[in-house]
Length: 63
Image (cartoon, rainbow, N blue to C red):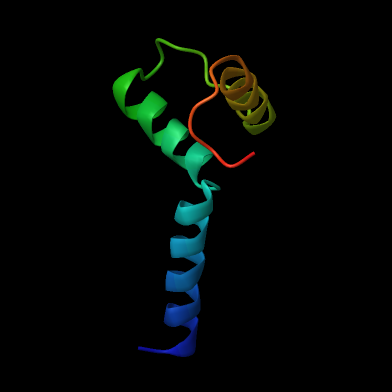
C-alpha cells in the first residue's frame, strides 16, 4: 500500500468521523431513492437545512 492510498484512507475515515461526508451521502440517497422526484439541494442549502434541524431538535451532542 502506497503513501497516497494510506492518505486517502485516512481522509475518508476522518471525513466520516466528523460528518463532512453527509452531503455526499445525501446526494447518493436522493439520486438513488428519489431520482427526479425531489429537487436536489445545493451543498449550501443542505448544510443550512441540517443546522436548522439540529437547532430545532437538539440531540445528544457536546455543544
